[in-house]
Image (cartoon, rainbow, N blue to C red; front, top):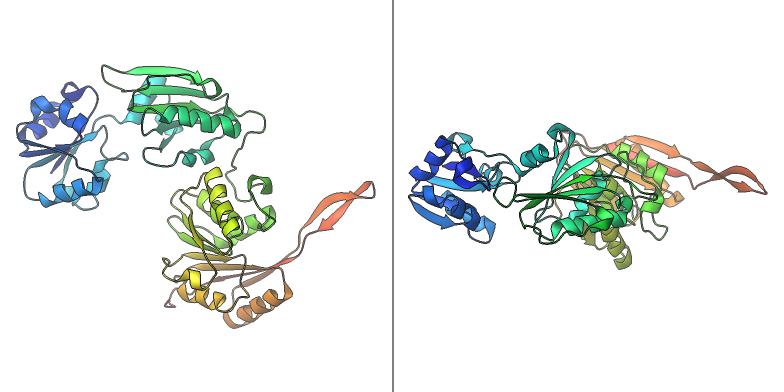
Length: 403
């Protein structure tokens, strides 16, 4: 099987070797646009990529043993079909000829150094994913879904307090319809945008811009909450104890405002989390917080533990912020946690603290008493006002211990 990346310049942009792969193929798969661009080189049967996308993958795999060529946009391994097919086809059975990606073409037009740019895809994905990357002076390249993408991006950026940011809309790069235009996000007025576009963003923060810091412990005011929130200092210490590692899954039991699960996911794009919350109003609030803070992929389960935990994928880490004293919650968490996984429980009541003392005596781990005081006005002066102390138990499940 061959995979040939093709740009908007069509056959003119292909090497002789890439063109030969198309000409020699008995079956050529591609989107309607790709097949039109390569039509003069197709000698075999042209097969338009079906919908849904997965059906096309099945059709290609069913042709194993035949001379099949798959056409892709630019670099097939940059958010492309090449990466999907490589999950099913050994690399030594593929001959891949990439073309320049949309990101490479964009940086060449803007004069930006690709290693210094954050490249994101919003193609078929929530635009909220760009929010954590909105930092002053940062440059982003965003691949959009269609002609409406640049305006939606400008509106999101403006509402978040970055209206002075410069947008570069690069359309149909590499082809006869190529067009590059620039505009401030808050003054976006571009029309007749080509559906095939990528947006370069030079981030400029205005007063009160919603900047999502790179470290745990975001300001409490960034979260919508009803008081049921793991506060900033405790949240930072809790995330430190949970110790996220690439690709891991967290359960946030009794999630409240979802702050721990959200900051877990912000630590790395590979991280996933499930927030379990009993109250409907709080569950809806968690969903809003997740979108507003750039992690719309947070999975929300409304229900009470331990019943709501049934059937969920096994976690690498568990945080119990509420409900630890409910019957069966701790036993269920301990049982399902993967070997080597971390469990962190915060207690503010004497009853829950007693449970943690018992678990620590039986299983070990680390027990920490955390007392935080903040300066506050006192009779015209300033004094320390203590918050309720928190007892935190953190425990790692032995690697040799089965679930």
